[in-house]
Length: 592
Picture (tube, rainbow, N blue to C red):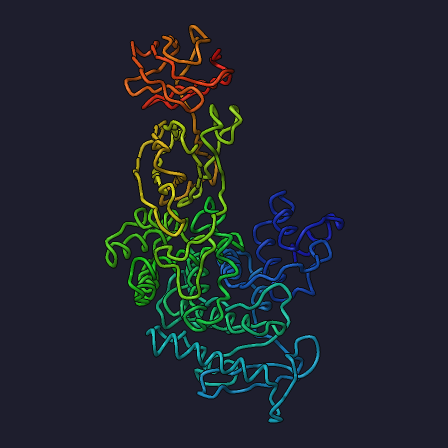
C-alpha cells in the first residue's frame, strides 16, 4: 500500500509522541491526509504495528479515543479502496487468538469479552472463586448502572443494535484489551451513505483498556457508554465542532452516574485557567477540559433538567446539510433560546463571569453562583494602577493577543492602589476586515469585603463591529479588584483557519509636557500650571496620593492647581482624567 511505502522514507530519528510525529509528517507534506487518518487509527487500535518512524513511548494516557476515531472515519469514508480496506480491518472487533471468554451482565444488556492470558488479559483475581475475574464482573455491573441511569432515569434512546454480532441478539459488546494510549473508545457508527435513516446505522463495540481501574474505570464506563447513547441520535462526521460537544457532555455525565467520584474534576482547572481556548476547540485535550461548559448550562440555565441535552442530540441528528462552523453552535443557540431565553452569545458571556467566580472552588456539591469562592483566582494577567503608563503587561511595545477561536475569553485582573486615582482606559482593537462579534464585562469587588461576597457586575457590553473601541474602567476608591473580561463571541470560525487576531491594551491617553513651577512650599497653597494634552473637566491631580485642593481646567491642554501641604522632598505628580486615563510623573514636584 502507498502509506507503507511512504513510511519507509520517513526520518527514523524524529522525536515526540506518536500523534505529534504523525501530524508533523502530514504538515510537512510527507504523507497524505489519508495516511494521517490511517496512522492515527493504527496508533489507537493496533499500537504495536506502528511503523518505527512513528513509534514513541506512551507517556500520557488520554481519556477517550472516540472523537479521533470519528475524525478518522470522516476522512477515510472518501479514501481510495486500499485505505478503507485497511481501516475496516483495524476497526474490527478485537481478536484473542481463539482464547476469548465472555461474561453476560446481570441484567443481560452487555457481554464483556476478554482473554485469560497475555498482554490483553484483565486482572485475573477471582475473589469469589466463580471462575470470572472480579474486574470483569465489576465492569459488567458498571455498564448496567450506566444503562439504568441513561435509559430509565434520563430517557436516552438505546444505542443502535448490532444484531447478532458478538454472539448475542441486541446485546451490547464490550471488549477488554491493552490500548496503551487511551482509557477507552466507542467505535463510530457505519453508514451506508452520508446521512441514511436510523435503521441503517449499527454500532460495532466499546473498548476498555485493561489497565484502567478504580474510579477511573467507573468514569470510563459511564463516558464511553454515553458516546454509544449519543450515536443513537447522530454520528456527526460532517462537523467536527460537535465532536468537542460530545466529549464535553460525556465528561459531564460521569458525574451523573457516579456523583461521588468527581473524575471529571481532573480536567476543569485547565479550562478555568485557559479561557482563551475556544469552546469547541478539538485538540485531544481541551474538549475534555470544557466539561465545565455543559455543567454551567445544567446548573445555571436549565435548572438541572437533563432533557435539555437529550434534545440537543436529537436536533443534531435532524441536520443533514453541512453548516459553516459545525452543527453544534447552531443547535445550541436555538435550544438555549427555547429552554433558557439565552442566545449562545448571552450564555457564554454569563458563563465567563461564573467561571471566574468558581475558580478552584468546587465544594463537592456544585459550583452554583460561585458560593464556594474562597481563594485568589489564578489570573491570566495581573496589572496594577501603579504600573502606568503601560500597554499590556507594562511593556509599552507589547499588546495582548486575544485568540481568534470562537467563543474564547481573556481575563485581565487589575489591583488598584488603595487611595489612588482611577480611570484606566481599555482599548479593544479588531481587524477591520472582519465582521467580529465581541463582548466585555467588568466584574468588581468592593474594597474590604471578603472574597466570598462583595462582587458586582459593574458594566457589560457587546459590539458587532471591528476597529477600535474604548472602555473606561471604574475608579479604584471603591474597588480593590477589577476584572476585565473580553469574550470572542463569533459563532463561526474563519474558513481559512485561525489567521487573525484581536489586541487589547490598557493605557492612558493623557499627556503632561510641563509642570510650572516644579517646586514649592511644604505648607502648600502654591499655584502650579500643568500643560499637556487630553485633559477634561473631570481631571484631578495628586501629589503623592494627596489630592490638590483646587483644580481648574482651563482647556484640554492646561490645568491650574493649588498644591496641598506635604512633607519636604520630591513627590510623584499624578494627573487623572475622566475619559483619557491618567499619568504619573515620579519626582514631578519638590516640596521645600
